Length: 225
Image (cartoon, rainbow, N blue to C red):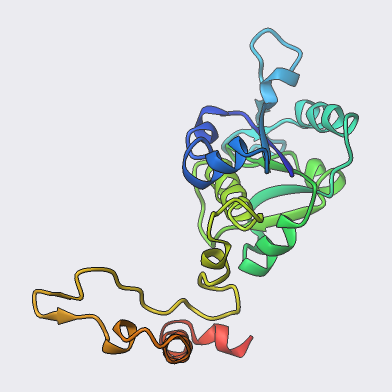
């Protein structure tokens, strides 16, 4: 799989994607993550990628020309399944969306910044818009890293124990059950006895009951789905 991330601040993305599961997946050749500096596609000596918005509003907007040239250059080399824009007003990032995207071969993720991007980019170049939550960050770099991390970790082989990824919260619209490790008792707080007995069918039944109870209590909206 290949993921190209377009940004005006590459340094904000490089670190989160250079460690842990994403780093191991990259080292194994399971995914190529390519960070593209939009400023490399500007034409003036100041490498200007933003300008004032028409209409007199405050803030700056990423210009259409360098983004268009960057996407045009990438698309001349390969076909892309989706060109994604990370934006607060996109569709919510859910585990089902992540699972779907993990099956793609090539993705472009555009990280907005400042007040956003020239809307013509969204109208004519973007195929999908994704939000990681109903709030505004300083830019789209962190959301782009979040989307990438979520996708990469479910690629087969990215996690040595694939069953661990399949049992994460939201994989089946349920929250994960509680987990415990040694010691079995600490400060008078004891691990549930059922987890210590080794009866796998009983443990799995308990875990499912706990998942359903936690989902009903903490995220009843998921039960409706």
